[in-house]
Length: 269
Ligand code: KIV
Image 1 (cartoon, helix red, strand yellow):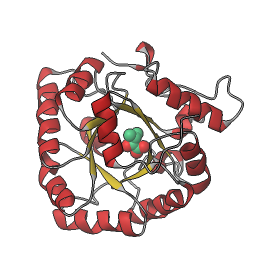
Image 2 (tube, rainbow, N blue to C red):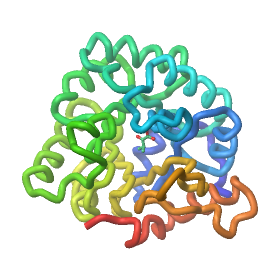
Image 3 (cartoon, helix red, strand yellow):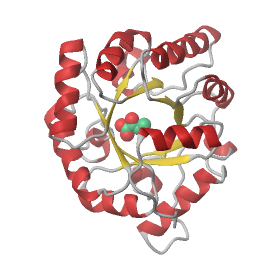
């Protein structure tokens, strides 16, 4: 198991990037599994709006409400002790700067979040600037943005097309300049994700974005082999050969840190 250090903060993650040390992120939605994820050495716990699909059984993340996110974030906050707690802002909870400030404050005050995550590129620059200027750390989610699934026409790899790739590069810089503390790239060709990771000073968390990112995230249920239907290509069942859930999560943390996960078969080109 990873050596336990004091609380993980955005400074810890910044220093890890400078030293070239990878960190692990996993979702959690309740106190008991948050406790196990934290004890296994995961640095960042994400209360993802993926809970709409894996906990609530919806077909997308769109029905998830602010009250849902506050409830699950508060549950996870009670279970964690070391990891940084990042909580998703759900669909349309940050459509205006006023809404974003009000709802991010709820996630921190009632939900115990240390950081919020929102989806979108240049369109979110002003909101990211307003949140971070008021002391709210932000992770900006680029690439496949599940809250835009209907606009994207499905869950598809983003950035294969040269113009989309160029826009993603520009968005990454604009969001960093607006104060975003972390970027998250979902379902992006590995070479593009690696290029963006090297080009920005902030940490980049990948999911389906190859091993060149500073960190990886997976949906907890997928990596424990609890997937309804087909497991996504970018995930791996870490329960295989492991005696306990904690051992499986420790294997994930180890694989992220030594660069063996994600492998070529979990990666898009
Ligand atoms: O909602 C979520 O769990 C996420 C991850 C898939 C990155 O955003």
